[in-house]
Image (cartoon, rainbow over the protein chains, first blue to last red):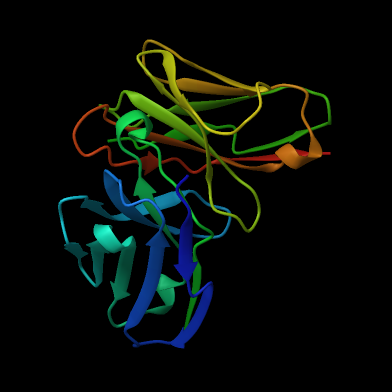
Length: 114
Length: 113
């Protein structure tokens, strides 16, 4: 059974800092991994998708890396802004009979203050 | 291009009642999955529909059932509601091939009193 852990659970930083959010998962047999952001009471917005054969993906100020064999992914946020405040969720995707299913932890709650 | 849409936005029901939630997938997507997110928790997978059939199911009781229509839209039904069913219900859609990137809707907030 896939278990996902995200560290830290919460993070509060001043604007402009470069951030590192960590995700670990127990089953390395994944098809892909997605990072999402969730604003309070809202749905999930996809930030980055990394296929299992890839090592990293970049989109603007965001960079995500994947080390499938060790069960780890990291999301880097450069030059953080107050608008980045949200909960960030990492979700490894199953493969084979669980293809298309995402597994979630509790996420990292990020607050960026001016 | 419309993304994933869900209705209703909010819903209040009484214990023992039944509820139906609806989801329209992103244009071009044929696979729909449902997730339950309790307050302070990550989303939990309920089930996935593809070609109008339930393809996968998470650890949820039979009170949770679903349906997918020929136009790929989907319904989630919950019978005999319990207080613990109060949660944000999220629908996700994807293409049934390729990257399987999941796109989520805004969710339906269900409150059971």
